[in-house]
Length: 216
Image (cartoon, rainbow, N blue to C red; front, side, top):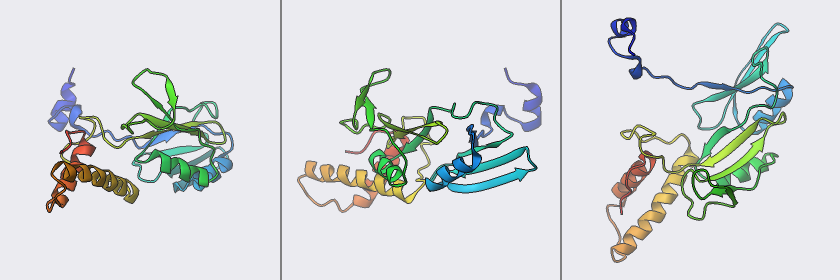
């Protein structure tokens, strides 16, 4: 039901207001230890506020993320280490796993699922399908992070009129996928050089991100 006061005050329903997920709070037992861990991941330190002896708030943001993570003292009442299923989406999960290991993090072997609700299988998804390959790691308290490789979004999950890449790495990965697809495109067309390759790349990368049919 639409609230009449909201309608009259803003001239539209609340369904048109942006609600941006800004911060996820995780419970930790040792703030300084957690700060060292997330700093060693290469995440950006946004804040470390101390208010007296009862409150401290530390905030980090993963590279390319619009959502940050907070932890500290005097905030969350959850048991330290109880956070789980914290998704970190990456465009190249093998490279992401290798980087985390190089930073001293213990990361699980990669695994994939044949479909929703299906049991986990070892290794990368054979077809390298988007959303299908995972890995996990934990912080010193046991809060569990889930890596997920996403290269093509399901239709309707992003603004189909907007194409953006959060990092240079994401853009480079998108170029590599477009390059491989374009090689197949040229083969199907008799091996002739495609002089319109910039337009083809642009169409492919925008369609891939929006979850639209890819050009052939």
